[in-house]
Image 1 (tube, protein in one colour):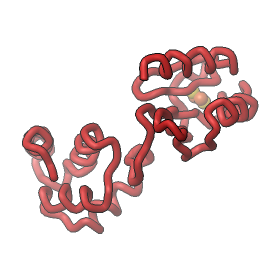
Image 2: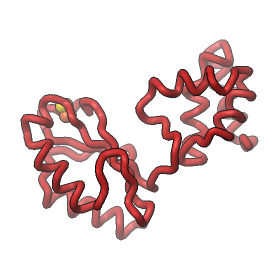
Image 3: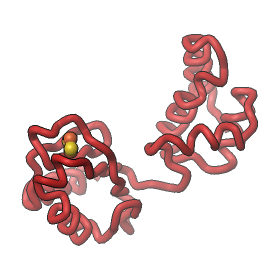
Length: 157
Ligand code: FES
């Protein structure tokens, strides 16, 4: 069920867009901030609130990479797989990250702390390779630097 806070935020977005369907991605993102991911049931709640069918809303959501339709970890590790990062060691870094976290792209660690997903250019090509964890960008990444970063998140868990 949508909470009153979620409804208020979604209503504000609908008002800003001028129509309810135009606010659908923001509505899903708002809900995802609260729930962490969007189950089928919650997709229905959002669709009903916007006056759309769940299939219509799901169809729009499927075009967006960062709408999660299954449970994800507390932190989302987005790994840039675009050209500059490839050139600067993406494969080696991804191998290390995969081993360190024990998951591949799309996977979630057993402790529920991290989900690792691919992402296109993060706009930090001059400091590649780059990743983003939640909202924070990390650049000039090396395996050692990644380990230190991950440890900080684990300590803060
Ligand atoms: S290619 Fe990775 S940040 Fe641009």
